[in-house]
Amino acid sequence: MRGVFTIDPECPFLPSLARGLVESLGDRLASAVVLLPSRRACMALRDAFLANGDGAAMLLPRMQPVGEAGGEEPLVAGEGWIAPAIDPLRRKLLLARLVRRQRAAQGGVTDEHAIRLAGDLADFLDEMHTEEGAARRGWRRSWGGNMPGTGKRSSCSCAFSANSGPMSLPT
Image 1 (cartoon, helix red, strand yellow):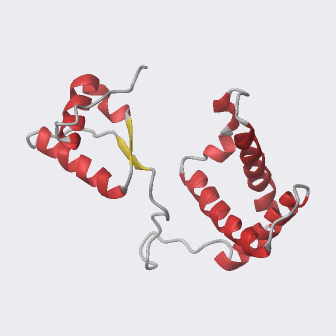
Image 2: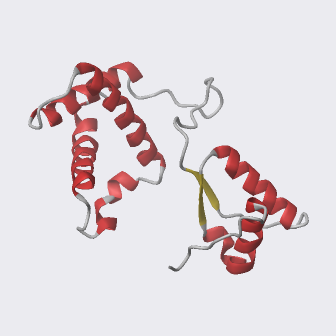
């Protein structure tokens, strides 16, 4: 499989990964995306690149944590901080109403479950908006119509919420 590499278990993982990426990608290193389990792993890989490069300037790949809950929201309003367009609680309740409507045909959900799903949906929509408008470009096209059943339902739910959610939120 192209683009998948293995590292011997006896080797130190992050230094070996950094060295291998530099050797295999060379000048294309900055165009790579490395998925890691946490932000801490991303910082450790950045340090491994620094140690591997002997202080030389280099453009690093995009290092994306995939295994942590929560976003990168600032804890305090500061410079560059923009207030949300709608109160977060109101948004969550409106999304919960959309979730309940969407799930009514499938047997419905409890209020507690709808609110939990609405929170997850709000986080997902924020992340999609942050990631260069991926929701607007359409994530279904990457599956080429071969999405598994659960993915189809999730994709339909996301498309429903992404398309109808903002229209029903007050401005």
